[in-house]
Image 1 (cartoon, rainbow, N blue to C red):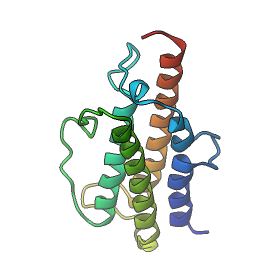
Image 2 (cartoon, rainbow, N blue to C red; image 1 turned 180 degrees about the vertical axis):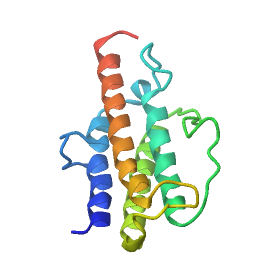
Image 3 (tube, one colour; image 1 turned 30 degrees about the vertical axis):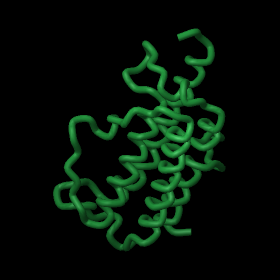
Length: 157
C-alpha cells in the first residue's frame, strides 16, 4: 500500500471502523438520538450534531483542495447547522457525513502521489500534511463526540 492509500484508508476507518482507536463515528453515533445530538452542554459550545456537520464540511473542503480549489472558510468554520427537527434530519446528517468521507477517500486515492510533498495549494502546507491532518482532525472531533455523548447520558442536562 502506498501513502495515499494508507491515508484514504485511515479516513474510512475513523468513520466506519477498524482503526487503531477502536472507536469510529458510525458506531459512536449509531444509538445517539436527535435529542442527544442537539443537546448543548456546559462542556462545549458545540453539540454532537454541530461537530458532525463540521467534519462533513471539512471533508468537502479537503476534496476541494485536492481538486485545486481554494475555498473561503467563513468564521463559522462549518459549525453552523440548519436546525434538526426530526430523526430523519439527524439520520440524513449522519448519512451525509459518510458520503463525504467516501468522497474524500476517493479523492485522496486519485491524487497524484508525486505531489504529496508539494503545497496542496499555493501558500499552503504540503498535500501530505493536509491529507494526513484530515485523519487527525476527524479523530480529534470523534473524541469530543464521545465525551459529549457520555456527558449527556450521565447527567440530566
